[in-house]
Length: 629
Image: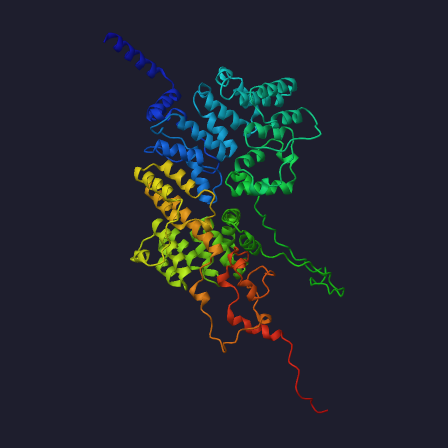
């Protein structure tokens, strides 16, 4: 008892003499859960994302979580899921109950998802990193991907790693050492490490060829590879040619690495760099600063030349010389924005374009709304919905000569329930055929799952025609429902991403989306649930537009005669649509399934009453009699 009292007394004196900074550190450690001090407590969010709360892994099922970490990948085509999954993986928290190897699976998923600089920062926050050889190997790969080769090779030289990697992964470890030697200019040692890797069973000759390319010019350089951190580092150091497919279907983590590489701006042409940057922005790995480089600059107003003034009379000089031809003024910037939105044919592309123009669009609506052409209003209102800006969408809708589609009205009511007037019921009532009715019921199911009041409309769920559950997703839906019941926020986020991984928002299974939205709301991720529902319905409206009742009601026709193709009214959009010269071509199934690239959606194209003015340009018929002389 005396020894215990002495220890307590000495601890008390030490704490009284401690500095305020030390006292604050002690307080922080004591206030954090004990399980949060280890690898699970490490956190480093990508720029622009907010951290989830520290209890996100509580209640998770270890086996399900291990499978989710192992299978989740960067092919997430819902922009909201790109953010949500990365928020879950890169946020630290209390460790879940289960196998400690789960932490390594989380860091492996971080390397796979990217961005590479955030993964590197994540490893730097791990306490006593080098005490875990397996985790250190993952950190080395992340450092290579981020272009931090000095730090990667510094970890390679950490004590104990040679012994830890001397058995199962010895050939891979020798290739890692060869990479460090090659990057440091030690060609002989690099070649020796490559030979040792081959003697231990390594049959891939790419590393040896890449090491030779780093050491000097070669006649047959190897192809560019980015399937691992060391392969990417060797490819960039050897200045291997970037594949053309990288800008269209490149791996997001590799793209983020290439964009942040030290000599990227000097070795990649500007046009190619813009394509790579756009792909990175669409897949969610570009930083806000990098994404801002894609914004279209607002042109300065053109000043008209003032006439010459007479110095004595103070009046304009009468100039008889014919004025020089002036170039046509550029189209309004709002018209350019509307065209850009209409030409984006994917959910990721349209969401990106909306993010790029939203700040300037807000400023233009607040300061000079008259500069926005009326025909551009609806496309820009859709852009505001993609960006989640309710006030801007409502301001543009009021000025637009065309109403929003019923599905867009449903999205607006989802973002602002006060603005909705029976939006679900009106959406179902606007459906004019069984196929449209079934899709309207799907939309209603997702809207109600996102928290929209049912208002007695749940009876539509038992109507005939509700689509059946598709095979292949039943197990995932069950796991998602169980995770939501346990309240495991992180597990739900990963399972939602896994359930919709690789699916285009417009063609995603509606029931899976509804269950995912409901699960997100149940664990407290209501904002993310609304974002997921909003993106699904907006993307669906791109390929299967719902027609407004006011826009589809035709005016009374004098006769039932079908107009000839020559009298077909051209599109009222901002872009001339030269690919569809007549209505017969527009009705083909291939064109109907293709996303609309016009500025205005199909629901507002070419109203029938405006076909009459086209007859004014028709040549007059030849008279049947000859007038007297």
